[in-house]
Amino acid sequence: MTRPRDPLSCPTCGDPLRFEILDDERFLVAWSCVNCGLIRTTEPV
Ligand SMILES: [Zn+2]
Image: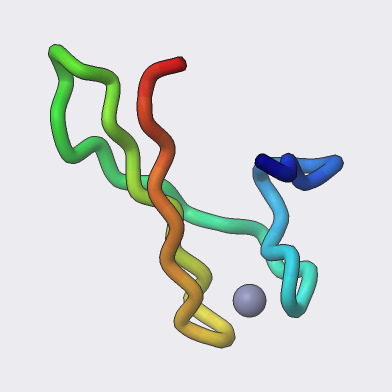
């Protein structure tokens, strides 16, 4: 599993990502890039 150096920046275009909380209890968060449309989710480790 690879982690980007800066999780707040889009790994594709480098734009800042905006995040949306999908599930508060399980700490599931979706990160999306408004520039290129990339969406990635983080799950609890
Ligand atoms: Zn992007």
